[in-house]
Image (cartoon, rainbow, N blue to C red; front, side):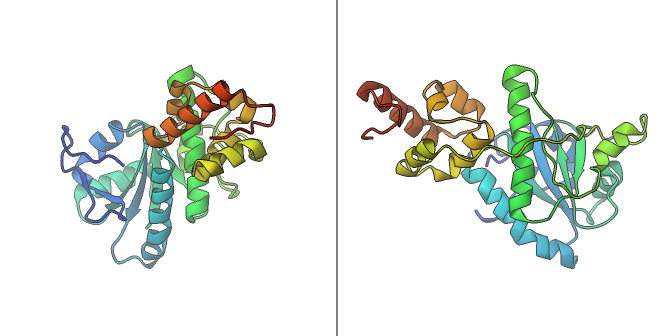
Length: 255
């Protein structure tokens, strides 16, 4: 994940160990959320027991996002007890306690409070839906469906504020039901396994990409999916071999 080193927001966010989540300086929270397409922020108190219980799940979610090569989203934590700026942010998003998880979309006024399960699996599932919608907006200018939100029986607070005719400042997405992702294509899964890229199976399944459609993808398409350079090069080389060797309809060929 990228740090703020070397740009106008130098020292805004730091982490002291590779397995830690970046810690955001409360005094620069507006600049930080405005400089990133997506920022998933944990507002915590160092003495909060629930915050301490959430920490390993939040770190695990961050690792999964990084391993999948999603560079358009950043996960950060912030001590929300240490300054007036932190108190301002808590009031801005309507936080009622600790920990509070909030997703910002490119600015301080477009946010949603996350109220799903506080497990790494559920947080990653939620964030992958948001990433997919962001990439569609970025590369296609529109979306086919709204992101799937965790089924908690609650309405995200950013959305609730938006519907109250201007009350509050959040502009969260409207909630709509979405179908479950298609199961991974078996042939594609076998290819990804041979390349050591099994972790990308879910990414392709969510986009309904099978072995046949994979052959039609270009490098820019992989970039749009948020796949990093290393895995992207492996996939491009494999596709080149498939085309050169004239793989049959089963997608079997020597790589």
